[in-house]
Figure 1 (cartoon, rainbow, N blue to C red):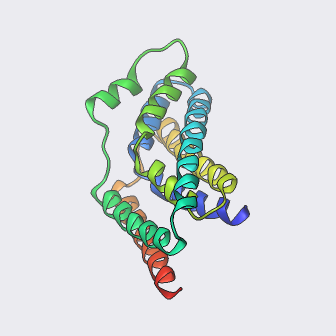
Figure 2: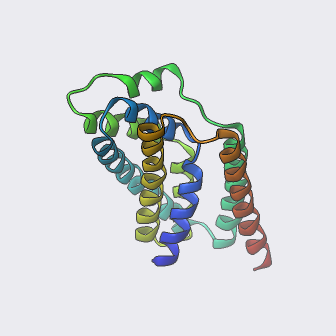
Length: 190
């Protein structure tokens, strides 16, 4: 379980750097107190990643391990390309993050839940759950994403500026490519 937790934490933390969810977290942090935003992000992340792990476990139980590893490696190379391309908030997503709400927790939970559906962190969690333990993957991916978004909240609330996007994007791209190559090479050696 510890291995699944650590791998999932690392992969999802890196995947979240420079992601549109971090941009949303910074936007929320400029408007609301940080703690309610972090609670909302945690709730939505736990739900989305629980569904992702369930999907990954079902897929993993039905496919041979070598095929899963090669597909996961290819997926991580795809995540590298996606990360290098970068994410931006569109007008609709920025409006969700900027709307007044009676509760910042509810606003953040709903906005982040919708933003994460089909996002690279959801797909990465599904991919990880095909080969790693489900509980460790769920905990690691949830904590990894919340930690990355907490960093964005801190940056948004305290510094009022975002991290250097180009450097983060290039670093995350390299890490995804390395994960992908390691998975493919490992699968082909078995």
